[in-house]
Every structure is written in structure tokens, then in C-alpha cells.
Amino acid sequence: MNLLLDTHMLIWTFLDSEKLPTFVRNLIADYQNTIYFSMASMWEAEIKHIKNPVQMPYGAELLHELCVEADFKCLDIDFSHIMTLHTLSLLLGAKPHHDPFDRLLISQAKASDMILITHDKLLSGYDEPCVYTV
Image (cartoon, rainbow, N blue to C red; front, side, top):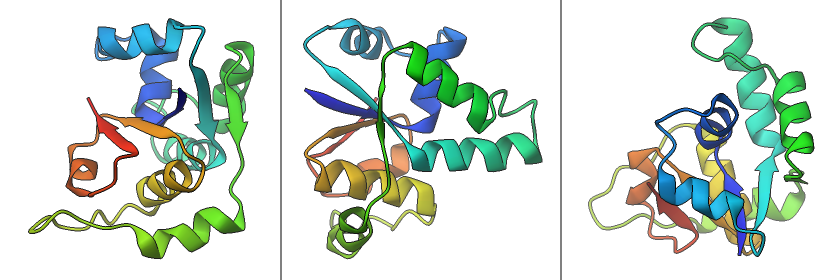
């Protein structure tokens, strides 16, 4: 499987945090899966790290280095990802998520035939099979 880890999943992976579910650890460790990180996550991490380094311990440079060392593959942002944004559908009654980084991650996963692994419960409101909320 092609798995795209959201920013929290990346951070928890490299912090070896107990917040990272065992199921996700097993997915990452499974050699049959290809693990991706998005440039959108690097952008988000840098913004949040500058704003509050205690809450976001990794800036883009260090997070990128850790991803490369872990042999995760980089998913750049391309035009197809942007154009997929308008195709995202919500479940009936669900409120749209207003975080542009998270919406872009869903769009990237959908356009690139990946599964987005996230802890953000608001993303479970999207009627998109590419979103897996843990």
C-alpha cells in the first residue's frame, strides 16, 4: 500500500510517541508498504515550529532529514493535487475542515492513489476512501 502520513503521524513516529497507535507502527514497519510524506507537512511543521517550538518540536529541515533517513518517499505538491481539492466530498451533516494543510493532504492522497493516515477526527467527516483516521 501507498501510505501518506499526516504531520502528527510523522512527528509521533520520530518521537517514538506512545500516541502513535501500534497498528500504524506495524503499517510503517511492513516492507510491503511505501510510506510517503508531503511537502505540505514540511510547510506546516515549519510554520508551527516558528510559532511554538515547544508544541512543534521539529522544523521542516529536521523533519525532512528524519523522513529521508527513514526511507520515506517525498510527495511534492503538484497541480493535480490542487485541482482535486474541489472534488472532496463530505459525509451528510459533516462540517468542512478549515485547515488548508489537511485538505491538501486529502487531495494529494486521493489524486495519488494513497491512503492518508491521520489522527484528526475532523477528517473522518470526508466521504473519501483515501482517509483513514486512527
